Image 1 (cartoon, rainbow over the protein chains, first blue to last red):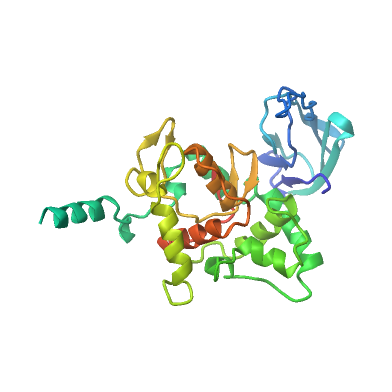
Image 2 (cartoon, each protein chain N blue to C red; image 1 turned 30 degrees about the vertical axis):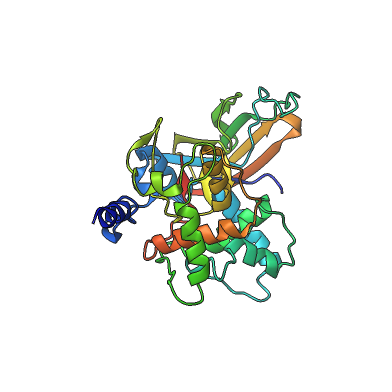
Length: 107
Length: 230
């Protein structure tokens, strides 16, 4: 099935308010350290980078590494400055890429 | 007299948990794991539920608008919920496949918060009796019965983990150890391997009968699907 990502952004906020954003990405996060029962190394397959932009400006990013749990939950805060769109992008091994966006109305 | 006392002692030792003392596995979990389950927007099982919703729309919605309450009444007559769903789809999916788990989670979530209905009636009796026999039967190289941990020693620790009462209130569950969703049958396999018994194949009647018996023990408790467990 296609990569599934979920984001939670408040639909409305007051200007200057600190808002919490939570994201969940469906991914196996195969570490690259495990072996099959025949001793063959299972190649690494993880999300390596997550970026959030707010009206085109990067407000949060993270580098992900092996040993992070499957289906990583990333939660962070930012300041509601203006109405617009938050864009989320996950990229990783084997050409993994997923995007999501959410609108916010700032009053 | 001595024999009567011995029988009484045996009955007391293997007595089922009184209804008022029953506790969901949720109550034995740490604060962080509870928080994971409680928040619908960050419960990782959501990823499966959303897949299940899409599969339900393309496979099931021409006959069923929703299946609210159904999961609280399964297994029925020796057929588990995932088996029933798969039968209806002409056995399209394999046991424990992402698709079948997703569909089962989506259907079961519709019954979240509803009390488990499992009656010890004529139709269920043969299955429940066999399930109970499995629960009390010692097996594996460690020669342990389910009841020795889950009836006699619940709340105590097995290595670093608290032993719960084995109420299947939230299946399929997102288990942190699995890093994914799994069925109650997968959980049974874990316990069987733990006591060094040979697990049954997925879909075996022994699993479904045991699940029916556990649902009877959990009758009246609320469904939590999709639950998170450590």
